[in-house]
Length: 98
Image 1 (cartoon, one colour):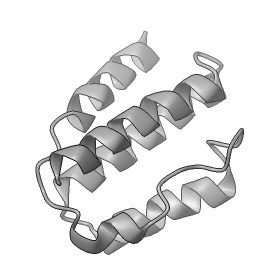
Image 2: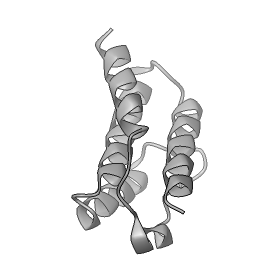
Image 3: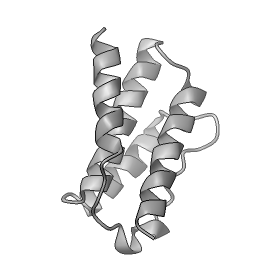
Image 4: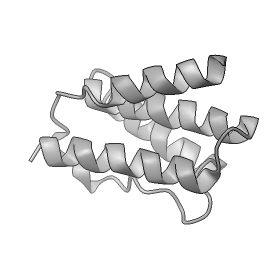
């Protein structure tokens, strides 16, 4: 139950990104195919968050990533599902900032 509430909350937060990425589009947001929640992907998300610590959209995207990976680790959703949900929110954020 807690996982579902966390996921829903993070999903709602991820849909409210308003700040501009600016030149942040040069970052490779996409995870390695078939390896969404791994050390390399985790580091990319942390680095992006550290570079833009006050960017609401990046904060929400990072929170979504953390929540989705927790659901994957708990066995609540598949890694593929998490990757698709995260990519949709990432693409939505980028589109809104164009």
